[in-house]
Image (cartoon, rainbow, N blue to C red; front, side, top):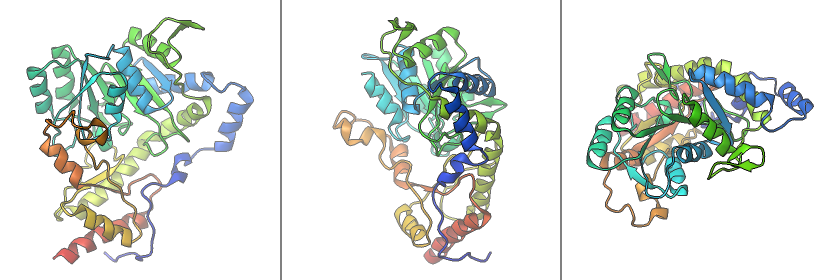
Length: 374
């Protein structure tokens, strides 16, 4: 394989891809002409289409993914005195929502191969302590092992919240991320596999009563207009423009996921003989939201890529239980697999709109780094 020019620049994400394939001026004009910008027809159309795509009866648009997590926990009555389990390698997003509610975070170990919640660690936690809810994050686009996790939570009588912010369209046996738990949470930040032109989020559920609470909580806790019937309501609404964009992009999601997966597969084939751990890209349970490798020489590899004009990032360098904001409150928590992963993970470019030449340039740079180690 001949190496492309060393001067080629490869971003981690291309902002232009957020609007790829859309007639944005027409969408914008349609929303403006409707003179309805909040909770109008476009939000309703997207909510119905997204629910149908997921295979659940209810989808509720909100302002962003973190709001979705917090509203989901509020609707499930999480708060002071409640214990919510999550992993500690997923950017503190679930931890932010847990702490906003005054609940207690409980951290469980990850599976070192998938970097998702370990079913064995979950089983141990459920057997040894009281857990009121579980947040399972489908990290980097990889569906967690829901065939084990979902029934485990049901049998324990524990609420199951899916964080699907990085896994739009991931599925196992035809069942999509977002269709396994009591409630699921989505972010539509522009870099997501289904991304808006700004912030946006959604909740999804099969439970009609829970859906009613979620809808009320996203708008002040109203039962009827100006009548506050639910404690903990807030102003968190998906706007009409973002809903119009998302509704237009939703039919393209599976094809764009296939393109991401194809890039990941090319990486995996090229890196198979290298001393780094690359994600498997051989099934629909992985949608390559982020292409994350593990390297014992991460910082050196990252510097090498930068010298070749290739952007990279670390998702995420500080595990939740070691974040400075927590002080010493989690000092006794030991998660060696999580901590090792956070010290080794490195995200390579993998995005819709990435050219074959850019893919080859990244491959050549990674290979040249390891050739230099020989």
